[in-house]
Image (cartoon, rainbow, N blue to C red; front, side, top):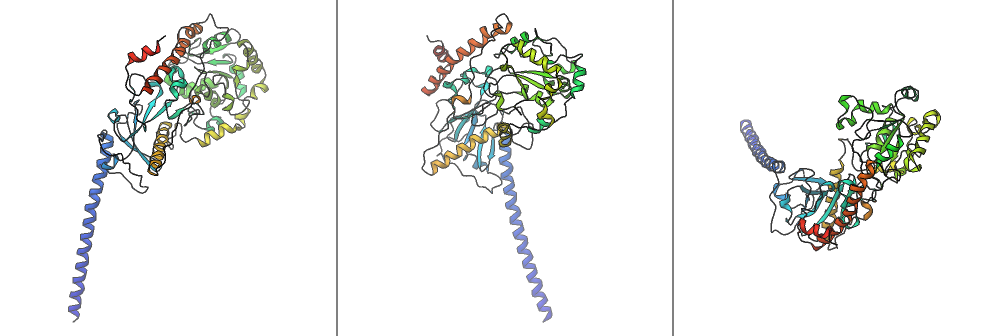
Length: 475
């Protein structure tokens, strides 16, 4: 009887083990298939674009929050965002933006794909030679432009900028402001890493000028070289760049790529004042020319954005050229500060105390959704892509509810700069000649180009360069 029970027990154990083995085997087979499909998707996204889907119904899958990957067949169910300017170089990527997924690509064969919902442009490369026309009702245009207006003046007029639905520009009013694109964070402003004590700077003044100027992009639209040339008649300025050059950097620091080199920054930090002059005068166009001296503990003498006081760390952290009617007056003020340590250091108290008192700057940095040289944060291009992706999905959901789509539109204040102007005392300088022969005529013509472009885009069919230029020069 006991033997019989043992046999029954052994038989039961054997059956249970066999069943367990069968279940495990099936699970392994399933997981292998799962992984194979996952590898297939990843491989296809990195090796090249997926083939555009033609002639299917415009159906978009909703993002499932807990799915860890997307099958290759799923990619065709997500909206396509096409970089018309090949800024990213990505031939195909299924990107996640919060709860939403979009397919990003530079492959222009997607232009007529029914899944394509937005075209992304990089301002410097924006050209009339090739535009995604005809533009369907659900085609959004998005502009990313962080650079100077001199790179593409026609974008800075109402007729052109309002062609776009979404913007990321240096102006605070754009949908994704890039005003602080050259500032890593408020902590680098507070840092004393490069700061040289005033007593040492006074000793260095025996061989250094009070002011330093470093520019190699000469005679730009701001006419900055004309101002500095006149300033040099009234106060000593060390100029290391190609523009108004009078002092040499060490050989290994003469390349423009050395501008962030620690040894170059140490040279600048020895000076009391840095001439921080932008190449164009536009609202909120602020570059490293301002942030660099503030980081180094040098007082910037600033010429650029008319609203720069909105972005300074304190109300006494920079000297504004606009406060003086002539370079002679500015030179006199610099000499006064150079002789008076207490007055000079009043411009550095905010840094010595680590006290940034400008609430606008603090709020902007706190709320900024992207980082600068920070691998823990998205960069501003990724953030721009996600801005457009999320907005595309918002309208998809509205359509599913039977609601009208929301229409975003760029406004003229998203990207605008005034006509370049020469300083009244610069009529005999090379900068004046450059303005009169290049920058001012370029600006005036760009207004005609913007109007011609607007007319042709609203016609909503492809056009030739000949048609465009005939409109531009039509009397």
